[in-house]
Length: 227
Image (cartoon, rainbow, N blue to C red; front, top):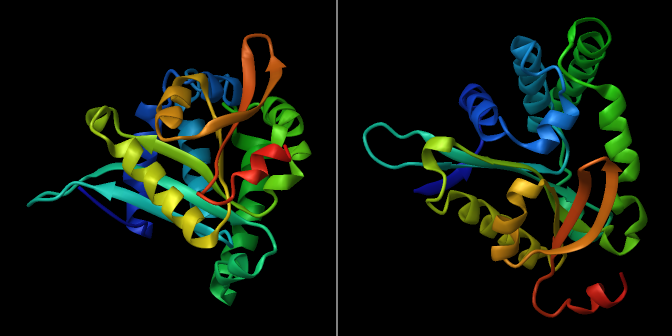
């Protein structure tokens, strides 16, 4: 298997991966309580969200692809560079085309959120964002953040998730910044195997926590002491 950058043609297959990978995920159920009743609404929103991430400044999306005559996408991750340090600036390059697309997607998202999306709970999403531990962890201001990571059910337990995390860890090590993410309970064990640690766990709703995890490159261990 190999890792390569995401392209527009990957958005459809990636959406299919989301549907399978997050089917029983408690985070997905909290965000989209109407997902089973309105699967079309959820798929439309997920495609819109992926298109938005694709043109977000600082976003670096990659897929793990099988090799051979008929390659297929086994998993993907969207890694976002946050902060105002010098290295972050290198990832913030923009174009008028991407800026225009973000504006159009913002309008499309407003319409979808206001009039057509019956699967998503904006209230629950806002509740999660407000409770997130990153709001009080200023020490992690400059960092790489895995916004989303998913592995196709057909390729799980084959090291695909580990490949994606390790790629993000290399980005963080090169920039000398931490790597962070928000995990569901289902994904927590896999991330811990790759060296990430829980730095904040906040109860959002009954039976549901916001789990913030981080990995720090060698030589920056002092960051943990300031948390």
